Amino acid sequence: MRRTVRNLADGREILYFDDHPDAPGRTAVDTRDLPRNETASQIRRDPLTGEWVALAAHRQTRTYKPPAGLCPLCPSAPGRPTEVPESSYDVVVFENRFPSFSQHATGPVEPGLVPVGPGLGRCEVVCFTDRHTTSFGELPPSRVRTIVDALADRTTSLGALPGVRQVFPFENRGDEIGVTLSHPHGQVYGYPFVTPRTALMLTTAEAYLAEHGRPVMGDVLEMERSAGTRVLFESEHWTAFVPAAARWPVEVHVVPHRQVPDLPALTEEERDDFAELYLRVLGRLDGLYDRQLPYIAAWHQAPVSTGRDLAWLHLEVFSVLRTADKLKYLAGSESGMAVWINDVTPEDLAARLRAAPARYGR
Image (cartoon, rainbow, N blue to C red; front, top):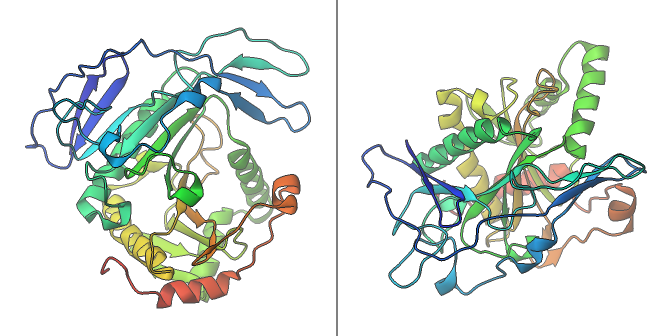
């Protein structure tokens, strides 16, 4: 892989990650006339839950479902400059033009019943390919490996920025998820706080370790591999399974056999192995209803400086599609009380995924 760093017209950073060192040089210049990138995003702490909420009103003007010919994530073409100045690329990462968190965020720090502070952090867009009409599951393993390396690179870089306490890489896919740009892409968020989900998982892991002397994910992994009823695929370094207490009608966890805190800690062999296994998972997910499954793929990593001995890196892939043409809506119990009610048993889902055709031939 080759890494090249450039800048866009408004000063934002753009990074090219090429599959091969001998790829064309990345020298194209962004010719657009753009104002300097600034943001007034703010965070406020809810006194009733202790959770931080981000306010980013400038995101109301972000690009919303443009036609394919005006996609800002496609390569630039004569007379049609985009967010990517080059005429082609393998993997590209750039600072989000409409970020929830930014290193440019300014504003007062106000203590009190509802503490307030600037939304200091960073949000990046990760384009997986320059092909507009493909999907992650159709990429070759070599490209998935480049993406993993890029996400590991961004985890390290964002984690070193002032104010960033947690780095979260993820992919949203499908209209049903709320995706507003259909080009295959993901994002990386650098949060100025530890997210509620991660904080809860670390608290649970700490209590389990104190009681049993073992990491909870290690015991979950051993249980799933021994039972086998919810396992989809196993490889030398990873296991993909439907969790026993799945919240979503389609939910798969992809877990390394070795406890590591984050993507940068994976070995070369573990990264190669993940690329092969994850494509098998995506092939079955899209084969489940014989259509591209709308999903969110969320990497759970350790925070930058806390809980790193407790966390166990894993990827959670889930979908709101409960049948081929029916969505799961978050109703009162889920949205109001965070008590999940799943219409699909994990054992049945695992059996249907194992029996599903591999849509991409894997």
